[in-house]
Length: 224
Image (tube, rainbow, N blue to C red):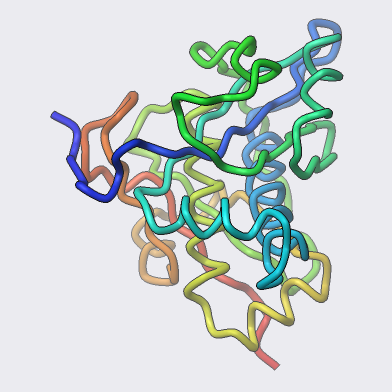
C-alpha cells in the first residue's frame, strides 16, 4: 500500500517529457542524466528561483507536498506541442527531456495529458567515463528493477534533493560549471551509498514498494 501524506491532497507533480523518435531513440542512461539536468535547470531558472519569479508559487506549492514526477514519452508533433507548455528542455548526449512547471495531477495541460506514461523503457548503454569535475554523480539501486521512465524520475528526484541539501557553496560551484551530471554504473552500490548526500526513498505509487531506496546523488569535485 502506498504511503499516505495528508499534505499531498490533492497531489501535485512535475511532468517530464522524453523525446523518443522511432528512427533514433535515446539510450537509457542519457535520458536519466538529461532528466536530472532538466529538473535542476527548471528549479534554478530565475522564473522559479527568484522570489518574484512567475513560476515560484507553483514550485513552492509542489515542494511543500510529496515530491512526485511523471515521465512521459513524446515524438513528432506531440513533442513539438509540448514545447508550448512552460518548462525547460535539456539536450544531452542524444537525449532530449523537458521538465515542466509542476501542478495538480488532476489538471495536467492537454498537450501533456496526450503523452504516454507507461512502457518507457530504452536500451541500456555501457557506462561512460565521468565529465570533468565538478559534477553531480547519480546512482540507481542495481537491486531494484525500474523502467527508463521510472529511473529518469528517480534521477530527477535525486538531483533535486542534492540541489536543496548539499552545501550551498558546493552547489554554487557545480552550477557555475554547467550543472553536469553523471550516472554512475561501475562503482559498488554500497560504496555509492556511503558517499551520498541525497537519498531517494520511493513513495510506492508505481513499480516499486513504498520506502524502496531507488536513487542517490552526491557532488564530485565541487568543494573549493
